[in-house]
Length: 352
Image (tube, rainbow, N blue to C red; front, side, top):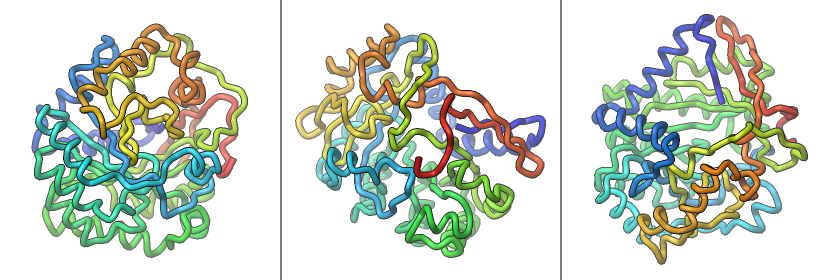
C-alpha cells in the first residue's frame, strides 16, 4: 500500500501513470474499460458472467524462506498442498478464459511461479490464445535474462519483482539470492527492453518498509533508473500473529466481484487473501470457470459482502488487511515523501 505525495515529487505520480499506460499498450481501449469495470462493478454489486481477472497459482512452493512470509509457517506447510498446476488443466482453463473474453491472468499466488518447470510454456500458451494481459510476481531467483527476453517478445504486460532491502539485509531476508547479482540481473532486464525497443513488460519492484527503512535512499537510487515503478509496502500480518483488529465500519470487499483464484491443486478460492485456502468455492478439475464464478458459493460470498457481514462470516475476512483500519504515516526519502498506510495497532518488524 503506497501513496506518493505529489507535491513533494510530482515525477513519482507521473511515473505511476506511465506505468499503467504502458501496461495497457496495444489494447488501451480494452484496458480502460477493464479498469472502469474493476472499480465500478463492485460498487454496483455486479460480477459479470466471468471474472475480469483470474489468478492461477502455478506452484504453492517457494525457493526462498523469507521470515515475514506465510509460506514459512508450520500451518501453511501442513494445510496447503505443495503441488504444481497440471498443464493440461491449465490449457483447458486458458481456453475457456480466452473464448469468453476474460481480460487478464496473473501466473502466481502464494508460491514462486518460476519453480514450475513449464512456467514459460504457460506464458506462451496464454499469449497464443490471446489473453490480453498476462502478468506474474516473482522473486527473480530463477528468472533468467533469456526468459525475460522472451517475455518481452510476447509483450507480457507487467512483472512484479519482490525485493526487500539492500546489501546484507536483502541477502538475509531473500537467501539464497545475492544482492549484487540480483541488481545486475534486473539491470540486464532493463537493457533487454531498450535493445528491443519495448516498454513491456513494465517492471514493478516492491519491498516491505521495515527492510528498506535502514537505507531507503540507497534502495531508490539503485533501482529508480532500471525499473518502471518502485512500490514500498507496509508489513502486513502475514504470519497471523496479530491478536486485536480494528475494522473499517460497513466495509464491503470488492475482490469477489473482480477476480477468481485457482490454487495449484486446481481448487478455486473466494479470495486472493485466503492464503490458507479456507474457503473453497469450486474445483476446476470438475467444473468450468463459468460454473464456479456463477455458483452458489461465490454468490453467497458476494451477498455476505453486500450485507456487510464478511468479517463476521468468513475466517479469512476476519484477518484480512483490506477490512482493517489504517493510518497514514509519512516517511521522508530524499526529495519524496512516502505515505504508508499502516494497520492500526501493528508494529512493523520483519518476522513478527
